[in-house]
Length: 211
Ligand SMILES: Cc1cc2nc3c(=O)[nH]c(=O)nc-3n(C[C@H](O)[C@H](O)[C@H](O)COP(=O)(O)O)c2cc1C
Image (cartoon, rainbow, N blue to C red; front, side):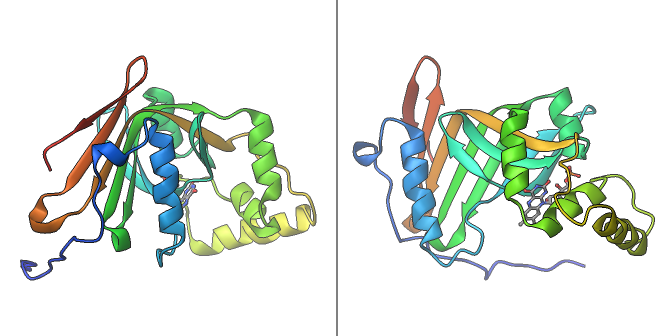
């Protein structure tokens, strides 16, 4: 089977991105774009694709939710024993990708990942709804699961074991990606898109790439 998608085509003509108007620090531009996204009709502005590499060199992608960003980097929470956790402990170089379709924007981020401190993990874990806490305990994320029923059984048993204040599992917590490369892509007419890249050496250097 072969489906041609030649007719699926969008015109990108909403905004432009010019060197003269971009801040020196990419986090400031990220903040402007993130706020624009929050104010748009995009459902989950903070959903980002995380790319890691497995020990046999296979690139692995999945969506996670950005929970904090700032000078330290970009933070998300997960199970440290998951596939992504194993990938990161093998190779902590990783990538993040945001695609905000309504705004014709893409942000690519590269850098190194470290675990956030336990206090920060606990602070975030404790802020989560009760059911999400139980869900985190119930899931051996990325391990093979015998059946849907066995997951629900585990979950229901945990509801009884922990009627309140479920503890944060040791293998659950945050990661922060410290960026060394951030690229902002703004779709433009005739596929002449704007690509402004910030690269960190001693300071952030800005350059433009061909689209
Ligand atoms: C919108 C969305 C948000 C998600 N957020 C998270 C998240 O914040 N943390 C997480 O561990 N998994 C999240 N997931 C699930 C992951 O995409 C993935 O299935 C899971 O983390 C297992 O990935 P792994 O086997 O590569 O480790 C999310 C999925 C979607 C579609």
